[in-house]
Length: 208
Ligand SMILES: CC(C)(COP(=O)(O)OP(=O)(O)OC[C@H]1O[C@@H](n2cnc3c(N)ncnc32)[C@H](O)[C@@H]1OP(=O)(O)O)[C@@H](O)C(=O)NCCC(=O)NCCS
Image 1: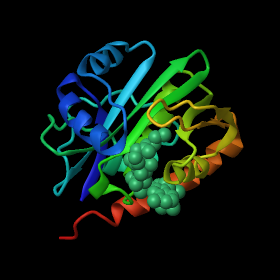
Image 2: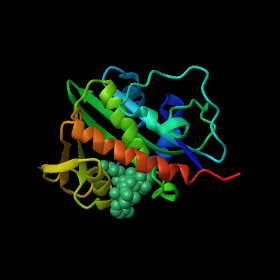
Image 3: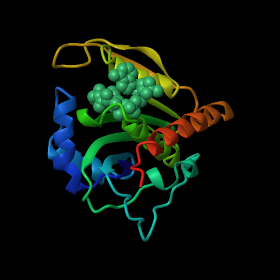
Image 4: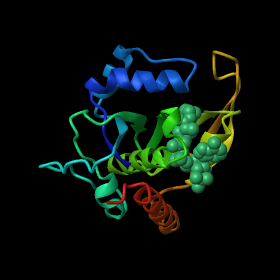
């Protein structure tokens, strides 16, 4: 299977909400998604799609300034597929000044464990660089070890808790922050992780 990421559009909202329902206890309305998507000054939302055939290259590629974007090659560069390939995950980001805040990452359960969560996170890291942020933060449920492992892998570290942050069950949120991402050390770490992810995704491409 080919997995790739592209910007979320309003037409994606029903599929995004379907993935959201499999992944979270509370859900956003379509109106909330539309408001987020229209706030292009400080929000970025992306979707991951799965296709058994290579997605056709876009005639006009978007500007892509993210660090190490070239490592991904045609496997994961954004393609506009017209919504034809199934949506298997999504992610979002807010940026205020030099801080990026990851609002959500979710992958449809049958597609978990294939590198798609990592692909989405990398896309949000690139988007945060493009929007001028130099560090990322997020909140994650205390019990959500899978997501915490993903974030730890990319250099997020626990930096405190928000007590009873989640209203459905009163669970605490762990606040995580990256170190500054514009350092040579972090960039080298990211480059290594992206090489591994590229190999993992390439190995899932159907062989002729
Ligand atoms: C968290 C989530 C997005 C991960 O997506 P995914 O596509 O399954 O993750 P990937 O296959 O890209 O895995 C990347 C890394 O995440 C971590 N990870 C993913 N699943 C894990 C699991 N079940 N247990 C422990 N670590 C896990 C690992 O560090 C993994 O790297 P590795 O394969 O080198 O060990 C997915 O489990 C999900 O959608 N969960 C529900 C929604 C959610 O909790 N979102 C986070 C909100 S803060």
